[in-house]
Length: 278
Image (cartoon, rainbow, N blue to C red; front, side):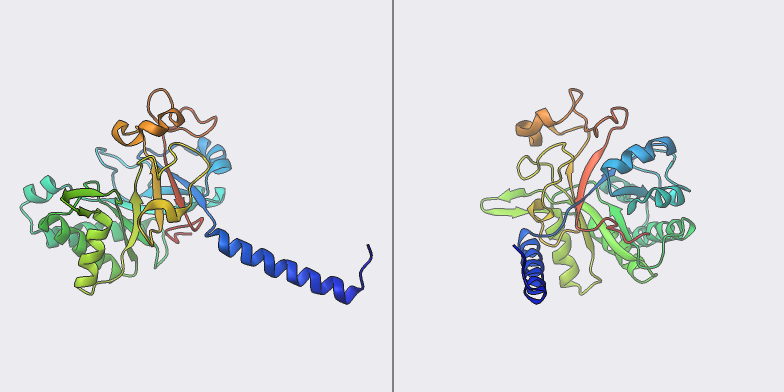
């Protein structure tokens, strides 16, 4: 059917408005990323880029490692079109206590080292630097002092602070629950500190779908306002992933398609560059 030009244009406008509204109602667009402690190697990047929009990028030695293979790799990741999740290793509670340094002073020292590494790796100002906080539940006083000193130091030195932290619910007693993410937010708000971006890990199935390249909606993470959700970890935690065990490989790890030599963690974000590190 041939329509007058003006009517056809009006219908196109209406269709465009309807499409925009539908997209808005369907929620935020999802982007998928991976993270791993060991750098995957330059040769693996093109295959990884077929599946992933962004990559975790360590500024410091990852947990349990005495070296960091990610250093010096920002340019080649940029050339491949990756966005970034920039992170630095934090201290476990036992490490804070054994250091002989006040927790807030230790947090400032470690943040200063992370900032120097970010500058050396040419990450621009306002890049979000995530502190890797591995221990979950309500944080102990020394852990919170360390974490808040770290994030405040980052915030006052040209970068934006973030934390990689548990979004899993912990039961503390009858009708009392907490997540580490909520615990940190409560302290940040109470002390009127700089906003801290949340990269939460929550691999319980559900809401997590297990090891899949079809990322779940970020809003399903259980942490309102989370910037990133790590929905699959390697190796899988049996107590959290019984209902989605078949999505993982037989060795309990998460892989992507043909990349069966690379053990990965899976993440979803509302941006292809969650740290704004490009």
